[in-house]
Image 1 (cartoon, one colour):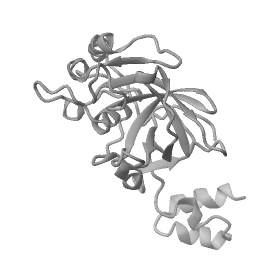
Image 2 (tube, rainbow, N blue to C red; image 1 turned 60 degrees about the vertical axis):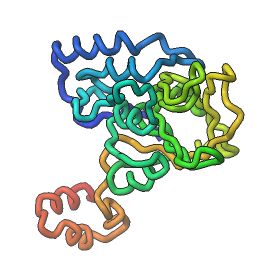
Image 3 (tube, helix red, strand yellow; image 1 turned 90 degrees about the vertical axis):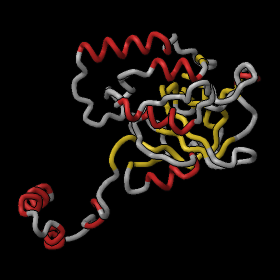
Length: 238
């Protein structure tokens, strides 16, 4: 599968918005490390996100920005993944994969901007979600996520551009190891992965399957009520 940057009508970003975004990024951005990436506390993240453009080039509405409660430095993985990916799902992380069905495209190949959906496993009973920030090669990516490594003895912190490696036997991204700061390297656990949620609307129910392999007449019947679509479909099959 071709790796592409997921973009959903990014539009243009004004100079003012870009300037504001860069002000926020100046707090958050560092040179990505191949493995260790960068870490920071949640309050600094919450302050930095003011009209910030996410990786898809869209300005994040203030209503969708992550804001920590006063005096609360703990940030869950879900609101951070929602903000940096633009994928508007809510609820516990382990529900995202099923929630995405019919709303967002899903697959088993990492793409920049996609959300990696972790299954519940061991003590991680609610699952986990992380956003792919960079593809290194066919079996290594960098992630942006929150509430993974305890930093300074505290959980609920943000880690940007940290390494995750596909360790599945078939190379299908069904199991990964993830950078764990206290170890200074990849954690030893093989975390099961449901797949990747892409910030692209799901295909209409039926889609091409409704007429794949059908004869000319059935193609036209599929477009009943859409004469222009029928003409295009018939012409494309000549």
